[in-house]
Length: 309
Image (cartoon, rainbow, N blue to C red; front, top):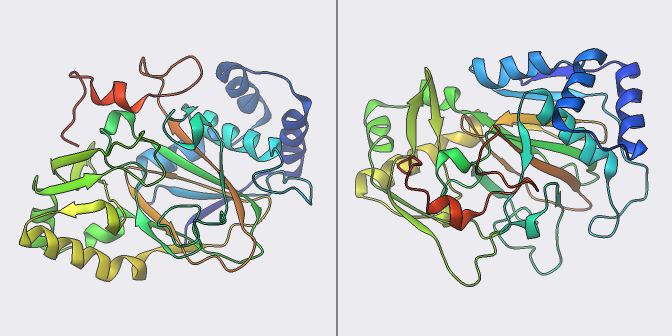
């Protein structure tokens, strides 16, 4: 079953392009109200992301950046506004971390010279399926992730796997292992931790919440330790997950938004030019600063948070 696709009207696309380039500062409430007035399908997106077994949607016919912009050099206001529109329309806030991408809320995703072989979004080698920031407690991990295409001349596939497809085939012993606190994670390579490393011990990978299975899954290099049963469960997942995932080649004017707790994602190799924009969405929270950031060190020090998943 392919991912659902929503194509917005040309009139709505033109409205978003005008707003993106106007420079007008809108609060989240103002933006959300304007999107409802213009008929943006926010309610439909939210239903898919939080109340369906396939919580990932491709959105088509979005405004695109003007041709000729270069990643790392030029701003991408249309892509940034598109991502904010998607995330705000489903009732969430765009946010970031001071320790990632220098605190940027909208992330340029493109190959960076010298990082070609890294297991990050700056590399050219295939980036294994993962969830964003699984080393962190659920309350400060992205609830949704949105990716907007600017240039994908490389034809690189974004891979997305709703967890429901995986658990539907999962043997009972694998599920039991993944639900056991026997895994250790470390932080993503993209985090700037001033030379320190975060490790989370005695973690579970699979847990059910509100009737849906949720996953926290690190790329292989960040799954450090487990028991023999845990290693066998990890290997089972890795042996099947690429066969089950959907592959989307994002083009200018396209975006994908998905539930980070209930999907894993990755990409193929990058052979040529590719530039996407990425943003995280989270529910309004007292942990969010006025600039839309959640400090990792502050979050890890919060005793009131559930740190077990």
